[in-house]
Amino acid sequence: MEPGTLLYDPATDRIGEYQDRSGPYAMLRPVGGGREWQADPAALRPATDRERLHAGVRAANDRTAALPSAPLDAVGRPPRPVPGCPACLQLAEGREAARAVCDRSAETDANVLLRQHQRQEHRA
Image 1: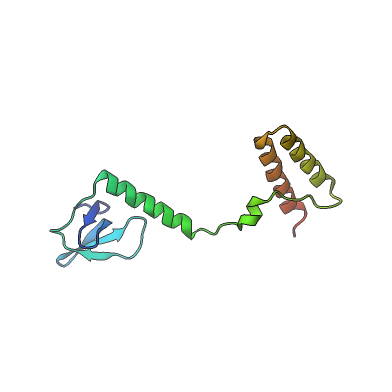
Image 2: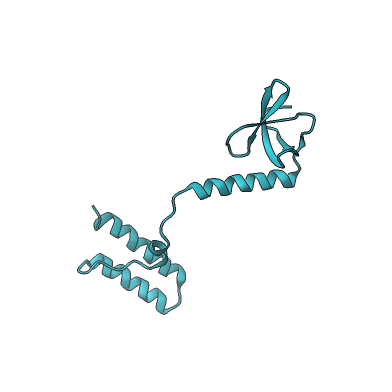
């Protein structure tokens, strides 16, 4: 077996990436990383395409779940213009004009630009 080969371990019902042998055992590591485990080499079989895809998606989901995310209210609500700032007012007016003609793309662009402006100009 070549290192990196994806194998199905029926004892744990998991797909693992073959690492090496350790005595009578095959050492497998979860797809995407994690703690290795020992498996009986005689019981292992190559993972099917479906099993490989499932393991890859699970690893990607695990990586994504570990990333910090913005609070829902921070991305769900449109930014409010800072009182007295002409640039904020101009961007908010552009957003309102886009809303009036149901141009969601331009509305989103105005929100992004307003958030960028506020991060650069109004926060320390």
